[in-house]
Length: 425
Figure 1 (tube, one colour):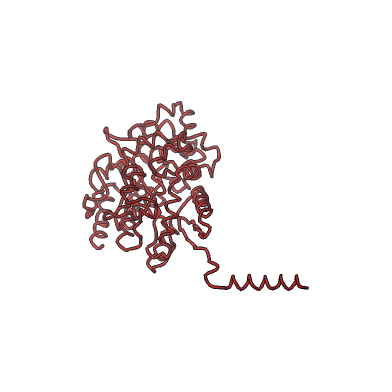
Figure 2 (cartoon, one colour):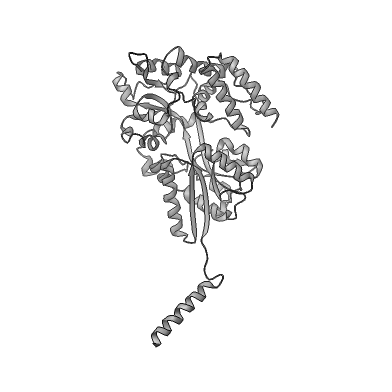
């Protein structure tokens, strides 16, 4: 009876202690919204669980979503001074988010560095520049994508081409090689495209081919001061005309298949050449596990002795409305310190200075192309009205490729529309 009484009193004592404010503490919950891929979602989860092992008072959870859903959800949340503690952002959208006060400046001391300069040298040269404003850092990269040229090595071989020697070095050679790669059946249907121009998706996909060709020819989307659309000048017109000719003159791509879901098509081999970044391996493998044995990534083509390739970057930033800014910064430091995990799971190139020395990076497909093309890499369209300008680009391309409107006329219409957007900002 005495023992029963002691056990009962101990239970009451424990219950009382756990009811006293301050003696127990709920975990700090950090929410992360991301536009991502399955492999990248897995990589982030691994790194977050690892962080929690060393910080048991923290619970970090990610919410993954598509690009369209993410863009809609984050815009509404931030406008209402809410949203997650951490979210990802593209270099393209920095001019749009930064002036609105949606992003908290990062403190290098939270990362264990005495100042920003000491922190910057742990990243590849210039890789933090798109996320710098007035001497402060606002985001840290999760990936630096260099869009070289993904080729189907099996298609090259069965067309009598050596994928190591015969891949196109110039845009003219894309046509020459493409005519050997393309396959058309007895009914005239193109069963295998030599090259695919993905113009039914998000505007940035349009830019992956148009941009580098236009840039190599000396043109750009906007004037240097960002006040005028210049895509309707000669380089932009030549770039769009090139793609019109690829469909209607050279017949190395099919307008009928332009609406197909790109990833499965590339994965099963019905597209021979495609703008390829390091993430292709993990994404395509979800559609075809054997894909890795049938493709390579080679340096992107140039023209007239000049070259440009598209570079896109995604980064993580801390919401300025977060109540857990310091903890969020510590998490950012942890998840961006391990480029090997990102490469292994997602195929992403996280640009820390030691990325090429990680075991996962030593023998990856496309390593040489990435190292070569980073010298020619340029950001895509960057402007505070990038979404509206991107939509105008979509309409211009589709007028020419679908409706066969002359490239110059269509781009003149785009320029008029974009100049009005910029004037009204």
